[in-house]
Figure 1: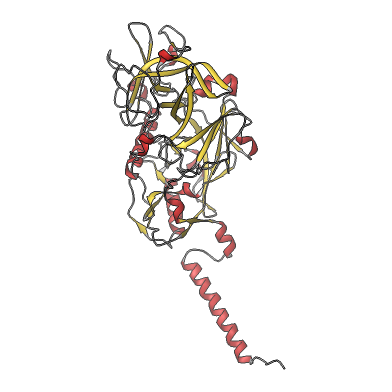
Figure 2 (figure 1 turned 180 degrees about the horizontal axis):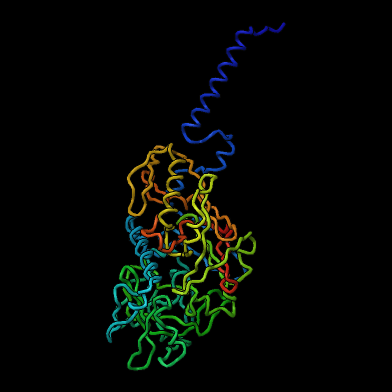
Length: 488
């Protein structure tokens, strides 16, 4: 015979259950979780393992991005997937990275100012460069390996959507050369190498508005280029032609590039730079007949993973759903890729910012800038919303440029609010978890966004926020494609 439960016990049980539910709701309110159900709340957050925020020592090569198109492997030059041992021995600290990043952004703003053209000149017969000239390589920290010359010599180059001219160091280094990983390119060993003359149409492309590239002519009528960067690095040499090999089946004869005879800077063992800007000097323009001014890339989620850079349609991006937003034109500098940001969502809610603020905001997407820059009003709203969602974690002192930092050393996992950007055409782009945070120590992990000094300064959608996205540049079509899951 079953034992009956006294009614007083049932009453106590129900009362206790009610109290527990009430306490949970109170706790949720105090922590800012609101009264919506737990499943909805968790959908607005990323759960991150703390160890994923730390640099890994083993390369985890991605299988994404393999195709029959001209696809190159992209690696972070500081990570274990890179063969640049010279750079691994001199990995910059967080302060150095952020300082270089700000220098790059300062030069981007400078190039877009009305006074920039007045400074883009070569000084003296020795082709010395003014301190404020040119672009900024800054923290352009993703590299690819290409072949140059006949027979081809493999060279590892930083790739940069904010630069146009491709250049590499060349023997005999009449001025000076910095130390690089591979042997310095020797044009005398290439049967297809040619110097470009001063009176040629190609030499006239080296104008002051061509991504900061400058020109002068030597006594021998050879066209000479010069480009300087924000950290006072520079490359000066002969404007030349040779065969560029992207893959065994993608070979480009008569590719125009800079053969650097005097080079200075901390390029981490890379042999030079691959320019992916919009100007006629860039790889994109020079290969237009082959790839119709279309390229795409995916930047890996961490320095221990790999991504890809693909030229032409039908590559990795063809297997993904891409949403396109139009490029905006800017007459002050035709090299950059301008886009229009229309909104930002944090933890499931769009920021309450007047549409006019976004409408008056000009931005570029840039592979070389690390931290996304926003107008002060937009950044302030983003920071406030993020901090409200992170009250469970103790704040700590900030870093240069970054003012919203947390000490996560007492946690194995953390919940951080999801962040999405909206671009013109109602294109929503979710930011990967490791693109929301930045830091090399779990005791000081920061919100990876920053505000510009002035509301009129151009915004920058940086590479930290582009991680794992398939980013497709349809330059001929005047639009940018964005999709998730391009690489891991």
